[in-house]
Length: 89
Image (cartoon, rainbow, N blue to C red; front, side):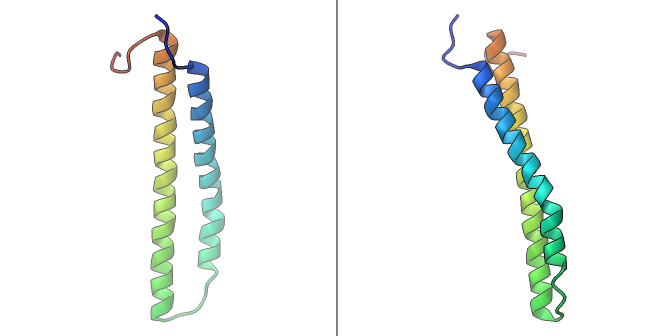
């Protein structure tokens, strides 16, 4: 049975998504160090550092979700390559 999907193309997109997750993770230490370099004190500083922690957490979660998406796309590419329906295991 012919499929309109190209397994190699799907795998290539998965690799690009995975690369973006890796690139995002690679930037997190630099961004964290930049946030930590702010040395003022007081309520504004506490608010800034709280917001910075939230940003880092969201970026880390985004990298996790990108990796999950890449993995799912790789599984789908394997199913397409083998001619299986997406729900088949």
